[in-house]
Amino acid sequence: MSTHVFFEPHEWSFQKLGHRGKLFESGSAVTSSNHLIIEIDGRLPAWLCQLECDFVYYVLEGHGTFHIENRQENCKQGNLVTIPRGTKFTYEGDALKMLLTSTPPWGPAQERVFDDAD
Image (cartoon, rainbow, N blue to C red; front, side, top):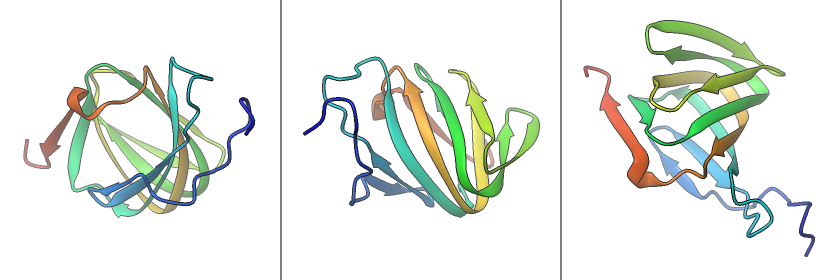
């Protein structure tokens, strides 16, 4: 197996809150971040806040809208969306497929999930 080229996983690593993701298993090749393919067709039913990670989404296919704090930002193929740690956000999309880079690597203990009403 290559230590620098990684193939998109066949299986989904997670499916929750209306979106799903495939985690690239880069092992010890890159330890400062992780990378996922994220897909959504609809809207996340909650808001997220990453307490330790900066998120960078690169839109591969489709189009959508990120709701970041009190702003609304539209995105489409070829756009880069940045979410600094500590920022409350949610998103929606039509056949939206993105590459997500999380720095440092994401862990479930450092994520807060808020209902739409929060």
